[in-house]
Length: 204
Image (cartoon, rainbow, N blue to C red; front, side, top):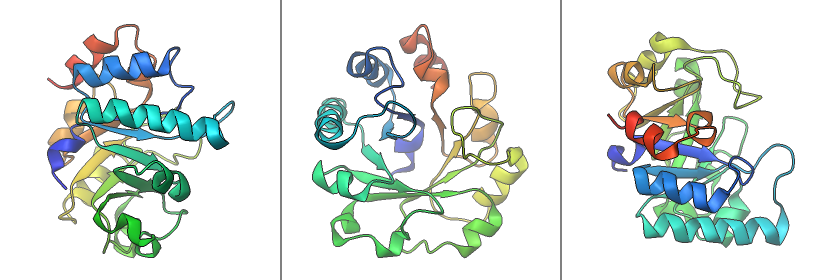
């Protein structure tokens, strides 16, 4: 995949924003380059409500020419014909994905060098590596690997790589200088009082 699409990768659920579709559009308009719908946690949408929301988000992504990725949910990704899926180490093996994903974007979380070496990357389009810094946005994120951990993974793969975990305006450039092609963020945008300004700063 084009690594430039990972430059500013936003992850959010339907509960991440006060006005999800309005706020997402503001972020997309300001320059977000990729979006992942990660519908996990309390009070999330399920069933038809989730499918309808995902469809609405997909329309927004298409409007701004942004890849629409679904986290972990194979059935939902197929149902809404998403542009791709992102998988964790404990999810389905990328090699076992249905044929629908043969020409889609497939992301894989790789927390460290040993996970990289033990992962089947035959169908993987890009890697998500971290948490680089401590994060409170993801309950199961694990220990921070630091910039050295990020760099170690980056130096041992040809795949595009997006850094994740505790990334904000003050530290994102360090991720880019230690091998990441882009940064993946949640709270720095979803909790921003000025989404447009935050996105603009993260793209500098």
